[in-house]
Amino acid sequence: MRRRSSKFAAGGAQKQHKFCGCPVGRPFNIEHPTCKTCPIDCSASKKSGATEAPPRTWHEGQILFTTAYLFSYNHWHGRPRYIYMLQKQKWKAVFEGIWALWGKQKDTKRKITVVRQVTQESNFIMDDDNLMTSLKPVLDSLKLQGVIIDDASRYVQVDKPVQVIGASEVIMVTVTNMNEPIGDPPARKIAAKAEKIAVEDSLNLRKRTKKSKKVSAVAN
Image (cartoon, rainbow, N blue to C red; front, top):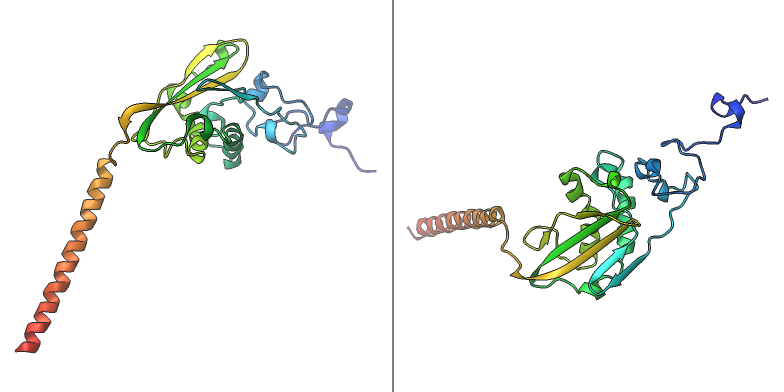
């Protein structure tokens, strides 16, 4: 008879997930502190047998509302890449077809404003750097939709997300045009291009000088 492992022998304990220790099949609850900090994101884990309800997304005027949870940068930083990819896929689904609401960016700089509503102050992302970098999957998804050309400062102005307390977890996103054209390329790019042109001119001058010497030698 096969010997049962001590993990499940005592009182027939429920089987736990390999990585986070959560019970397999337990419903995902974003309000639960363990689910909030889950390092493998049980909301999309096939191994755990649990699934997160698809986020609701709607808009009122030019403001997009979604129940998709905006995690801190620390949720995926320093962890396997697939954890970030799960977040990226979630926000990609949220913004699917959103270009029809805000249009695609052309030659005007845009401003992105995000309001992060949570149910209690303990859910705030306290560190400003983590709060700003938490927008990475949001900006990547907006770029895929053509709402912004790139997340560089010459194309967009991204304000620090505002965090408020409300009755439910909701993210509000607004994209507006600014009365400002898209900025010039960064100075380092201009300098690199100028250096490249200078090198090419120098090589061309050497070739012309060498060719003229050959012609002079043949003529003599």
